[in-house]
Image 1: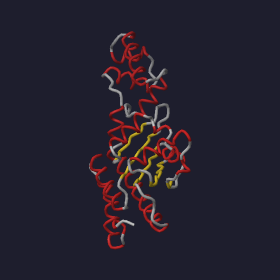
Image 2: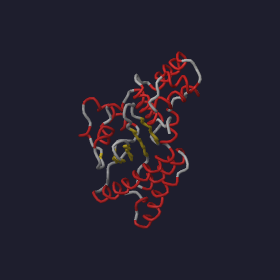
Image 3: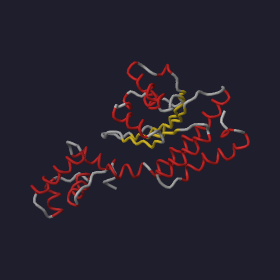
Image 4: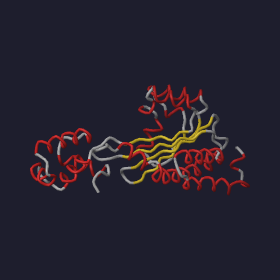
Length: 246
């Protein structure tokens, strides 16, 4: 067992985990995650969060301390769609201890690549925040647990760390991601969206904005395209979900 988890340093270890909540931006969050991971006896850490939104595609974001070359392979080969740890964390609440038995024929390549990059042993912790937010924290290294006692200690610490990172991400990652994905509406499009949400017809909107009805129709068509919707009700709902209507 690594020195990071000796009894004499347990207070510092817990302090490193708790400090994650104080992260000021994503880079700082990753730095604090990595420090806590090392103190737990792991070389690598990854955090992913998914926001599930009605009528919209889910938002996924990953903060990773895995080797850059492995991350590139993971992206280009589309491992996320067949990664057993990702699938598990989307539907479970208890930690997943990695093992060969979790890999199927279509995901065996992931195990092979993970082994090459020192990511063969570890565990993933899912965190659920209501029905619409789920995250996972993975700690990885190149050697198995040395004992049942070590496994219990580090998994318990990992569960606390996962919840701390989840809280921090909602404050510093989620708002930025939502802002980045929010479509840029013109002033007129935003005005039309506001009145659509209040149930106004094109004719009424034309009178309110003092523009012609064909012009209103033009702005609404553009609005529907940007929001990827087909109806006025969908536009209103998506507008609220994206924070475009307050």
